Length: 231
Image (cartoon, rainbow, N blue to C red; front, side, top):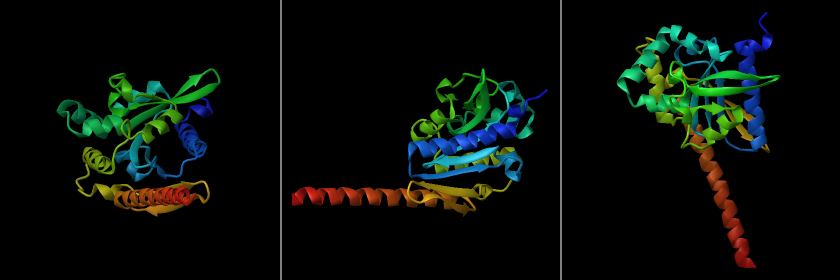
C-alpha cells in the first residue's frame, strides 16, 4: 500500500511550510515570492514551483522519490530542453544548472529531508556536484549567497523564454508567463501579500525594497555618527 506521505502533493506542502519556518527563523526582512504552479497551465511550461528570494530566482520540479526522476524524460518539452542544453552548450545552460532544480525526499528511518539537484542532471547525476543541495535550510542559505545558486531577473526571463519555446509556444513575451504573489516578510509588519502579473513588476518591487532598506541603514548610520560627534 502506498503511504500518504509518498504523494508528491504532500512533499510540496511540507517543502512550502519549511520555507516559511526557516525564513522566520532567520529573522530576515526581505522580498520573497513562492508560487506553486502545479496543475496550472504554467506547470507544463515552467514546472511545479517558481520562486524568488532576495532577488535570486529559481524553478523547482518535485518528484515523490528519487526513482521517479527519469519519468521527466517522458515529457516531450523536457526532453527537448535537455537535448538543447546538452548538445548546443548555450548560455542558458549556466542559468539552468544554478536555478532549475528537481527535488525529491530522502527518508532516513522516521526522518525526512530533501535533496535538490540541477534539472539537467536527471540522466547524469553528480555531473555538477557543487550545485547539489541537501536540505531546505541549505537551499535557502545558498540562494542568499547570490554567487552560488539562483538566477538574476534577466537570466530567468531568458530561461523562461527557452522553456516556452520547448513547450511549443511561439509567443515572444516571456515576462507575461509568470504571475503570482509577492510576499514581504517584516518582523514588525508580519507578511504583506502583493499580486503581480509579470516579472517586470516583481523585479521593480525587489529594487524598491532594497532601496528602502539601504536608505534606512544609511539614516541609522548618520544618526549614530551625529551622536558620536555630540559626545
